Image (tube, rainbow, N blue to C red):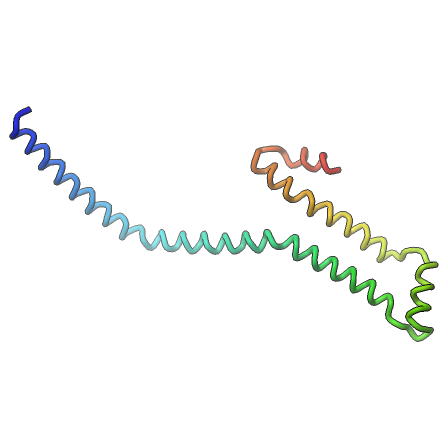
Length: 137
C-alpha cells in the first residue's frame, strides 16, 4: 500500500466516523422520549414492588393488632361485674370460636410468612412451587 492509498483510507474512515456520530445523535434524539417514558415506568414498577414486598409485614402487624384488640375487648367490664371477675370467669371457659379461628389463622399466616422467602428463592432457581410447599407441610 502506498502513501496515497493510506491517505485515501484515512479520509474514508474519518468520513465514516462523522457519519456514524451524526447518525447516533439523531437516534438519541429520536429515542429520548421513549427512554424517559421507560425510565418513569421502571420507577413506578419499583415503587409497586416495594409496596408488595412490605405487604406481608403490614398484614402481619394488622393481624397481630386485631388479635390484641380482641383480647383487650374481652377484658372490658360488663354490666355484671368487674374486669377481675371477667378474667377469672374466662379462665374456666372453653376457647370461643373466634379465639379458635384467630389461633388457626395466626398459625397459617405465620407459616405463609415463613414460606414466602423460600418460594421466592425457588422461583429464581426454577424449583417448582409444589416442592417447596411440600417441604413446609
